[in-house]
Image (cartoon, rainbow, N blue to C red):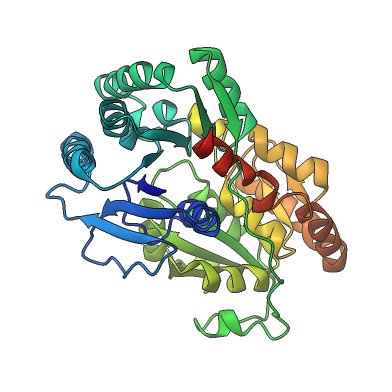
Length: 368
């Protein structure tokens, strides 16, 4: 079966979509990823093949309108048997064309889209996306999303079947980090414990600035940020602040395997999203599982799903508020316990927290 897998990004860093395509390929299907072409896009090397659109706009409503049009035009004549729509910004053209051409359709919602930070305080934009969501989702027999909290909201709002496909890593060997050469490659000293905060810092509620400010209290650690976005760029400008004494380090986003080695080489993983938007309050960040899979203990903010994972598995400390004092205290608590203890707890947790636990749902949704 030829399956159009639709995304609004450039395919380079979307691990969930790559893992989905790998499941499809292994089952004998032919996924065709359809996304954007950016000036810095790297060649797509599989699984499956890829088509990228070069769009005039890069953000805002004009971008989304242009994307919908490009997807609709391509889907009308593409040689495909099914459409896999990732997130609400690809669902409308997928639904319209699949109904017209009698194609199978699967919807995978990676977040609580209409409650995302980018729509807060923008009632017109939110109304547009809510209208699209209210039109599309009731016409689906069922859908996928990333955690039980978001699934419950969709079930309640639309009365559809919603299954949970958590974005967890594939089980693999833990990288050998005995010499921590991964940090040395970026000229980051390993003389002190290293805190790692990774991700797309596109909004101001990821706890990035709070983690940086906490360096004034945590005088015996280094903080490494890996990613991109507004707060990442701002943190680069703050690296020379004398209060940090050279203990703040910023690395642009990395390919997944390289980031995985760096993650395994750290001492504490930070997950500090704030519940300022329902999407974040109910989120289950990928980095949480990335930390667990390499044995890295976690300091996390009290998001509903995050708290459940961290506390039920004993893999870190949950703070009640994202403040410099709370972050400092939690980091000290984690570092005061033996690393081997945290490693063993993470290894026990990952036995049930991996991609294979939920990935059977991919074929179940495609073939039903």
